[in-house]
Length: 390
Image: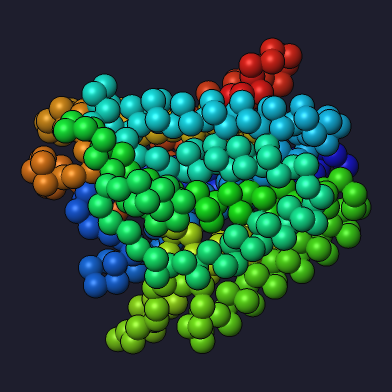
């Protein structure tokens, strides 16, 4: 029973991580990636839009399951030991995000731009959990739900500039850019408030994997899933609350559907979280009874998430360089990269068709699988303490 529980979580995590690779391949390969937004309904196409929207599931599921896994990791430990582990791992992830992840994204040893993304949000979620795990699970759930459900009340509070209050608000809720020197800027891409609430919910829901039999657990997960989906549909249809991106009149049915699904990720709105977590809980409920080669394939990735994350960014980035060389392009544009593409006209003109994105994605996953499998085996067979931080 325990094995199945863990495998269902690992499957879902692995599934969204494979989908995540599609989004990051798109970042490096699609024409216009550095100058346009695939969810901008005035410029996008349906296939490009849905290529982006399907990857919206990755970050929230990753964060939710991190909270769940934290509870399961500490289930037979005392809370003091779990708190210490979460605190140290949170600090470690902050270091990895700033130094390792940013280098892998931009191949820029000068760190002219530092973007704080999902690993940053997970790190602060762990730091947050290290404090609140001393509360009862009911209180942790209330805290998490309150953050996720009510943070959109603060959408109208907008700061600009480089003052202390502005930087704090960028960090907590708004997101934004801070220039820390003439040569270095920091972008708060994942404001922490919504994400730490979602991780707290993941932690608080974890007892259903310990205290309930499979049939009861499936019932609860399906109930929570249906509630989330119905609440999303109602709030989005009536355009009442929880999404700053209001509905607009479109010229066709497909664009009306696209507009309906076009919820805000930065920071994640309530509707964005409901839209992504609802169906994901349904998958989590249904997958427990399924065991085959396909589920085993995704489980491999789900068991080595941090290793996979950094490795896939590196492989995708190197693949972009190789393809440039093959096509007689200038591989130097993939070094010392910057999101401010106005500083590099070659990046403005760079990119490939969408079919290339899907082909590269398929190849990248094939490359990653044996590496992740071997690392999973090593991690499973080893008792080295430091592996718990990787």
